[in-house]
Every structure is written in C-alpha cells, then in structure tokens.
Amino acid sequence: MGKPSDDVERDGSDDEQGPKGQGGANVVVIKQQVPEPQWLRSEPMSLCQLFIQSESAYACVDLFGGVGMCEFRDLNQEVNSFQRKFVNELRRCDEMERQLSLAQFQKIETDLIGVINTSADLKRNYLEFTELRNILKKTGQFFEEAQEADSTTRKEIRRVSVVDPRLMRRFSSVNQEINIPLDPVTDINFIAGTILRQKFHSFEQMLWRVCRGNIFLRQVDIDERLEDPKTGEMQAKCIFIIVFQGDQLKNKCKKICEGYHTTLYPCPEMPGERAEMLRGVNNRLEELQIVMKGTEDHRTRILVAVAKNLLEWKVMIRKMKSIYETMNMFNIDVTSKCLVAECWCPDIFIPK
Image 1 (tube, one colour):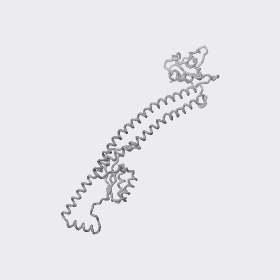
Image 2 (cartoon, one colour):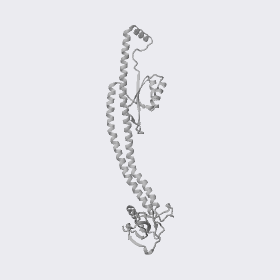
Image 3 (tube, one colour):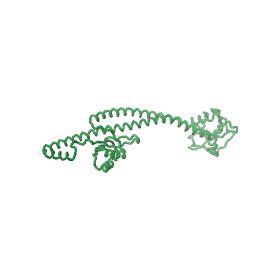
Image 4 (cartoon, one colour):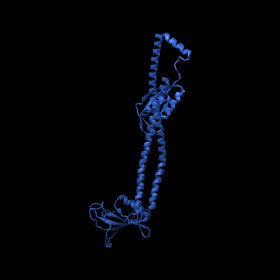
C-alpha cells in the first residue's frame, strides 16, 4: 500500500492541539489532504506528532500496536541500528527469550528425556519378546519335522535289519573292533536367533565356508515387519537355526553371529518347556503393549502442552521486540523527559 509523501508543508495556522493520549502522550495533528488511493482507500490521512513521556512510551506503543490505527515514521534514519536508544532493551529481550526458553524447557526436557528413554527400552523389550515368540513357534515346527524324520529313519533301519540280519551283525562287529559307538550322537547342539533378511545370504555363505559344511542351517522368514527401536524403521527379519556338533563349531558359529549383528535367543529343546516359555512371552507382550500405550499418551500430553506454551512465549517476546524497535524510531526531546514520534493516521481514527 502506498504511503503519503513526506514532503508536506506545515502551516502553523492549520495545526491543532489534539486530545491528550493515554499515558501522557500529547498529539499534534498536522492536517493534510492525501490523494487517493492511499493507505486506506477513500480515507484522508493526517501526519500526527506525538509527545510521549518516557515512562509511558512502552504502554502507548503497545496500545497503538494493538488497535492498528497508525504507521510510525522513522525519525532516526541516519542513526545506526546499534546506536539507538533502546538497543540495550532489544538485547535484553533476546537474552530473556533465550533464558526463558532454557528455564521453561529444562524441566520439560528432563521429563521428555525420561519418557523417551522409557519408550526406547519398552520398544526394545517388545522387539525382543516378539522375536522370541516367533523363534519358539518356528523352532517347534522344526523339531516336530526333525522328530518325524528321525522316526522315519529308525523305521528304515529296523526294516533293513529284519531283511538282512547278517549284514547288521557284521556292521556291529566291525564297529566294536574299532571302538565306534553304536548309540546315537548326543553332543549335538543348536543356536537360534534373528537376522535382517538382506544379510542372510551372506551369513549363510560365511557359515558354510568357515564351518566347512559341518553344520545344518534352517531359515524361516518372519511374516510381520518389526520396528527398530533406535531408528523407528520397519525391518524385514528372518529366523535361523544352526545345528552343529562340538564346542569348536559352537564358538565359530557364535563369532559369525556376532559379526553379522544377529540376535540370539535361548530356546528349550523340549516341547513342554517351549510351550511354557511361549505362554510367558505372550503374557509379557500384552503387558508391554499396555505400558507402551500409556507412555505414548504421556509423551503426547507433554508435547501438546509445550507446543501451546511455546506459541504464547514466542508471541510475547516478538511483541516486546516490535515495541522496542518502534520506539527506536522516535526522537528524544531536548529535556530527555519525553519522546517525539510522528505517524500517519486516518482522520476518522484521530478522535479515538
């Protein structure tokens, strides 16, 4: 919007002493017809001169800014912004804004850090129990299949022994001579865990090369995507079961699992123990879901309160800074007891 020209002629006979403003501000009206269109369309404008007491200048500018009736002129254009009267007040506003934010946010920050840490721990526990539940279910299927295969193998051995008993006796006598036990191998162990799906192929190759094929590896994908408690990303994972014999292979497998950042979980071999652990895991997951929901609600309430107060604080500080920036546009009277300001104001607002 256009402003009236500053090149105006001031006729002393046309000057009128306006009403005394609030806070001791005297208004001198310099009547002047303004061509259209201008700040307010079809409204004549007047250049007003205000004499405001220093003590009430802040309140007066606050009042003028609230009603929006006038536009102040900068009477200190030749003065650097760092050399004006209220530059220290502006600096204090900046410092107050920083200290206010720091003081108000210290307690909120402490509460939020506690809530965030608690939420991270809960999410990590929830992830671990979810993976353990999947492992217990999938390993149960694996052992059931292994038992069926073992039963089939035993039946085949019995069938062969019945068909050719002389062969079985010969095999037994040879084994006894070279001290080979006929009992089934009992030193077979397994480890189970989870790994990112995109890492499994490389993980499988590494196990096969290091262990020279002396392991049995089984992999099953987890149907659902799991949230990473650190990044919040949804990740696709799979379950693996490594079957091996001996402590040497066990140590090699564990080192490879550690290098690929897998997560290992204890898994009982007996079906009854697995079923009991699975019931406990399901109960724990239900409890964690309730606690996590309460934690998320508490964090939401804190953030909503912070957002509401933050807006109020920003408005208050910006308002103070705007008032002092406007007051820096005023001249100081020779007595240093009042401030002199000039502003453009529509004639219809002058009586107000």
